Each structure stands twice: as structure tokens, then as C-alpha cells.
Image 1 (tube, one colour):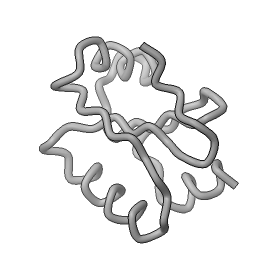
Image 2: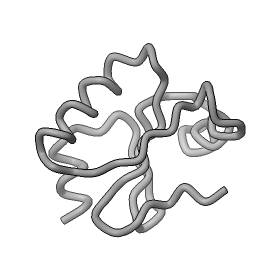
Image 3: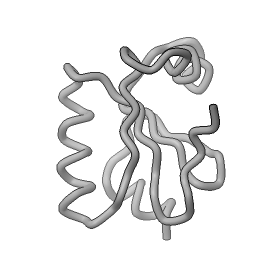
Image 4: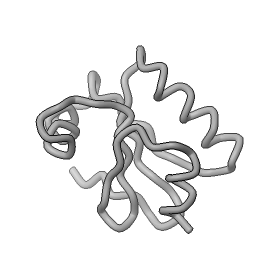
Length: 84
């Protein structure tokens, strides 16, 4: 399954219990940045994908950008800069 988002948006890998995920989602909404949320505990194979992007760690939020690059627990400013 391809999780690379369209231009101007991001894919955000999360869990329901992640406070950092909740904070970033709130900031993204306020900034008008659209995202697709993927819960790694519910979507098969995504936990392994996140681990492959984070040197074996299942760290969330992990963000996937339209250019195929990723960021782990980025700030809103980092997301905005990458999408600019």
C-alpha cells in the first residue's frame, strides 16, 4: 500500500494514546494543513513501516511527505517548511 500523500498534504502515522500526535493534529488543523491519519495499531503493516523509517523504533507521530521523505515527531514549523 502506498502512503505517500499528494502535494500540499501529509500522511501522519499515529496511535490513539499518543499525546504528541494529538498536539500536532490540533496544530495542523489550526494551520489549515490537511493530513491523512493512519493508526499504526489498526492498519496492518504500518507499524513495520514506521519502524523502518525510525531505525527500528515505532515512534509516532511519524510524518510522510509528498516527496517520500519522513520526519519523526516534527514541530508544526518543520512541517510547514517542508511543505513550502
